[in-house]
Image (cartoon, rainbow, N blue to C red):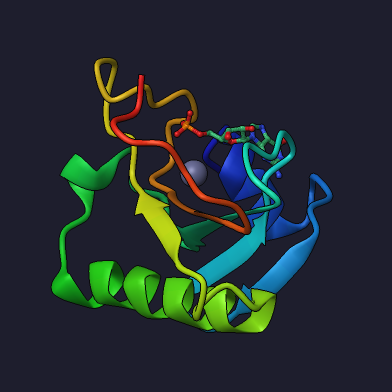
Length: 112
Ligand code: 5GP
Ligand code: ZN
């Protein structure tokens, strides 16, 4: 069994506030929100980073769940940002690929 924080959330071993779920992906609230809406979308299968995701199906499923989350959270109209931090320079801190859905306020650009 993989010793990975987000795999433990998928298995229900660590609690998380789920927002959406299907066969491929799970969405849950970020524990340290950087915006009024901050949800993480992950594949249920373990891939270390965006660089390891092997199929368009998984990437597409993450993108479609991000759309669903934005609509559910009421930010589809006002706008939102999808971010996949990848590797050290990308600022990735958890080694299971995840897509941040951020919104609910105007977000600055460029990121620091
Ligand atoms: P990264 O920096 O890798 O792009 O994003 C990792 C995100 O995971 C951070 O925004 C952080 O707040 C979130 N996070 C870390 N540990 C936990 C946890 O145990 N539960 C939840 N829900 N989010 C977490
Ligand atoms: Zn994992």
